[in-house]
Image 1 (cartoon, helix red, strand yellow):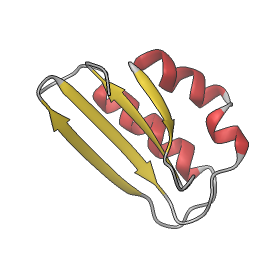
Image 2 (cartoon, rainbow, N blue to C red):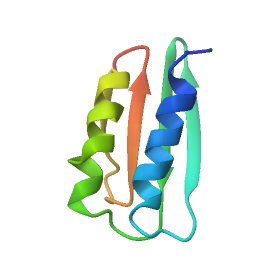
Image 3 (tube, rainbow, N blue to C red):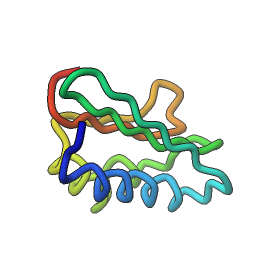
Image 4 (cartoon, rainbow, N blue to C red):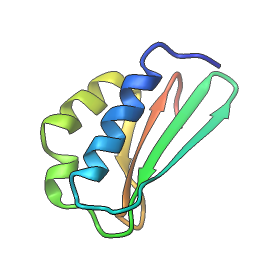
Length: 83
């Protein structure tokens, strides 16, 4: 599946995790039918700014839904459908 906002959203997720000082960031892309889930994850818990700062506003504007991973090491966003 192709979504026009996926590259920009992936970039914003990457930058949000990079700003936490993570030396390594793992990016994953999952697809199911018309849905795309993009996740960026580092090695340390993310600071509060990662889920409440300016990048968060852009991430939530571009995606259907978004949130922190359960271990609070990353951020995910869903395009094209419900999770």
